[in-house]
Length: 102
Image (cartoon, rainbow, N blue to C red):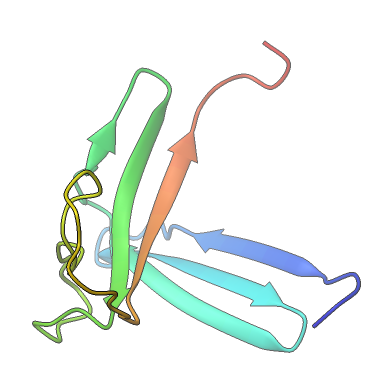
């Protein structure tokens, strides 16, 4: 689709302790994706100013969307014998707490 698209990101973290997940809804022109992560999730990457959380995977060999998987090809610095094509999506939520403009 070419041209301008409208995006809307909604993050819902219910204060009720019985609700165990944070719901994330991403709407882009003509499509909606709903994801969730546990409130007690541990970041897979953490630096001074940002945290990256695993959300979902699609196309992993183990077939479980709630678990991440390694990329199914050789390391980038090793010669490959043949080309390979894999349809794999690994989605992460990145929380960045830097102050805008600094």
